[in-house]
Length: 208
Image (cartoon, rainbow, N blue to C red; front, side, top):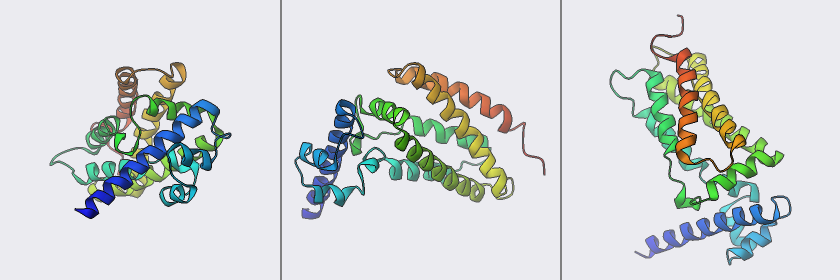
């Protein structure tokens, strides 16, 4: 029971650090915000902050590990007869529905994070590295799930085509309307999905 209470307290502290950091970044700027300010806003010390995050940059990607594991679990849960394009669509739709509130990304904060990533070069670079890392792991998992249909290169191409189309569509709508609601984002991402599927769907299998 004591262990459960400690874990809940750790999760709460982590959530409060994320919320405090994003609000400070939004209010006074990412570069202008210090780790000490984030820690103070969450009512902890800087030593506690570094026990949760290596840097202030990492706070904005607090959900990355859980998001990646959820995506990999979806790939591992391949359904009988499911074409890899259908599986990837399912992964994307699960990603859109991913709940990051447990780590403090709730309410308006996910939209604030997107604005920050789009406007701060250091965060753009980090987001790109994160995306490449997730794509690489997804491609490996997809190849393992479809060893007869996809070699390592074809799996990487399929994941890259779908993720690239979806991310590009999502960024386009966010750039045009930073306050776009979830329904609009889903609609535009659906366009990205349809575009990608035209190249990797069941009728467009890679040549052997």
